[in-house]
Image 1 (cartoon, rainbow, N blue to C red):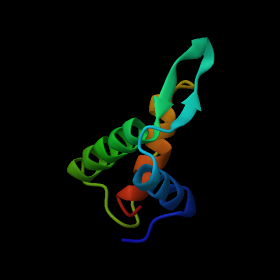
Image 2: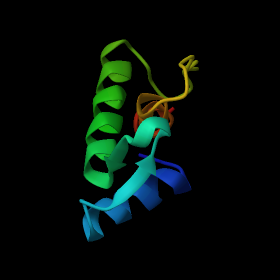
Image 3: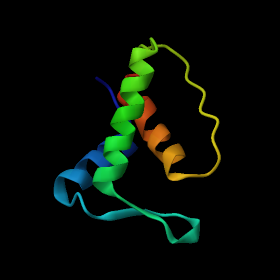
Length: 80
């Protein structure tokens, strides 16, 4: 499966330090590498279950949030 450089970056961060803080959201909410990776994988599974395959187009429409960042990492994990 071909993935993008940002996904490889996150994968390597999780392998080295899963508890590392990678997002600090407004209001003080924070997200660790491993949590972002798990959410990204869940989004990738959801897209695949919905029929997304190589060559599919996925639109992501969300407000600024940790879930948006996870979706931006999750979509490439499907091979889109």
